[in-house]
Image 1 (tube, rainbow, N blue to C red):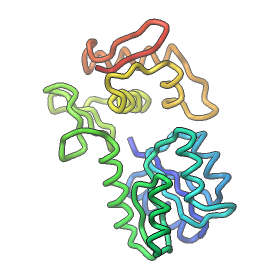
Image 2 (cartoon, one colour):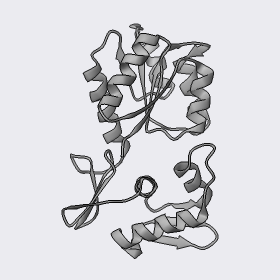
Image 3 (cartoon, rainbow, N blue to C red):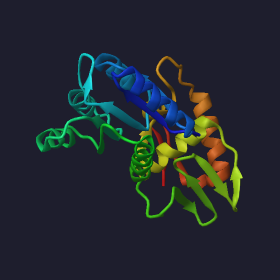
Length: 222
């Protein structure tokens, strides 16, 4: 399963070039050129990483990320910038960005920076993309592949997304509403029955004891 990127870039040629390149690398990319569109897309969708140009239509990337951070959205962000002043860079990091890349840049370098942030996004000690669930089960958090007894186990997209959510919130009780917000995109109707099916399927693979039900509240991964 591919990681999802929100790209806000007001230069049409650069936006198309970056989008096409990242999609060729296996990412899902949603792009726009303005502050307002970026805000709406970030609120409505579930993204793994943001890539914002500092100069965008109707505002700037600093303020856009500031507003999202103030709303509790902590998605990692890379700034694309032509700014060189240290004060501008300090402002960027103060607004909550994780990295920046200066124009002009190589697309391969951007790809490396994206991969690096996605790996850091998840807290685990492994030097690769895998999180160990049990001695014989591991999960690739980037490609969203579940490995059991050295064999790939096929799981549905929402089951993979749910497992990522659990791994990011280990030991925390997640309410059904929190899970719905993370698994279902804006405009989709969440289904409690479907959620129960996803939970049941994951338990069959990783173990009943890994996911605890809290009646009338939600679920906890331990």
